[in-house]
Image (cartoon, rainbow, N blue to C red; front, side, top):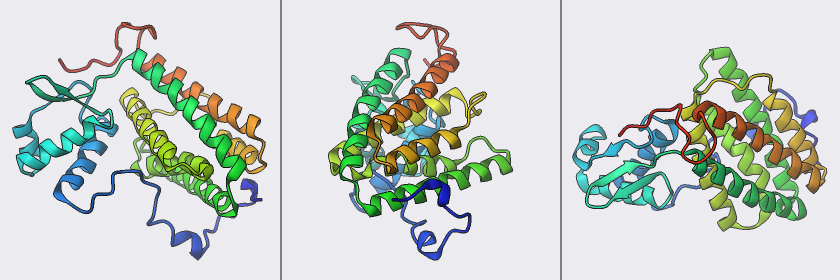
Length: 260
């Protein structure tokens, strides 16, 4: 069993060789124009470059992304199935708006699914799964230190490593479909965090929280690991609701002004 406290600061060559293969759950359809465009649009939506509620006119998107109208339309259609874009009846597309009710539901369902995935991973994960968790923890901690050193709160490298870490915890569950759903919900959560602003949460040590989750997970203490992970998510969720919405109830006014 791997103890996260035993991870050294010098990353071995075997670890470096894995840097070019981060966990991704995007559709595997080859290196086509549509899929490249899908990836760019997806990233811009998650990062908030394309804000919630923004109308996505085919012609405008075609010019902005230097792509034909057909690939743009196909990419937007694909994004609708991942909950990031909405089709407007006879009026094209728009970035899916945000709401307190949707975020609360997103958090609730994410906790349900990840609890089951983590319990299954703890029950069935092998030595390679343990190694991958230890590696993912090392990488996200390294990325966090680099982000602090750079003074740049919005950091794509940290976001990628953070996602890799959380997905590594679940990877031993044995269900590709469950992992796919967990990945989609994780990405939607990132969108809310980016929209809320990339400022660090006050009086919180995320690195320590991650380490505690890993320690309980690798010790195969399922109840403790689940409780730590759910608390980690709910703490973040409460903070994001407070930053984004003046009232966490349905219909509460937005602190974030969505385009009409």
